[in-house]
Image: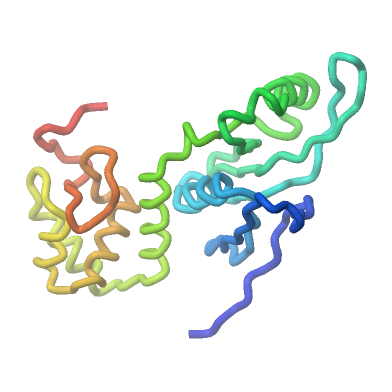
Length: 226
């Protein structure tokens, strides 16, 4: 397999390496083969979830700064943690902060100023994300999905799709792996089926051999309707 070095990050803000309590991480967006720099564990977890989402077309971490004026008439600049491009064409400006730091940082007011003064010229939506929005189960499942995407196997996928057609109600994922006779390759195929929306997870649970899955779009006993 030919290795193609990833393209550099698009981040405009230089990451400080002097902070003793800092966290530095780099992800690779497989769809663009570009590095994504993370300045905190929360950022890393959020970007991992976003990379696994099919409605997000691109992640631009630390985009160019925007300028705003506060209530005292003083000008400031602000660099968002990320600017997201959605498949529907909308743009979402995101800041990531630990819950306890949101109010002291003045971030709510900063978003208010920017939305009022710049608005849709920069983004269609402005979001603040904390640990309340970034669930460990979602992070773990995103990591599992991203790994499965890297090892496609068309032949096994055909076998798995045929097995899914026989599903009625909920089934243990590991039982389908066993029925496929494909081992870990079959597990990854089932993960891709979850990723594609062919299978659905029962409850908000981690993808594992013991999780319960069902065929999406079919009536499944015990499943809540939307």
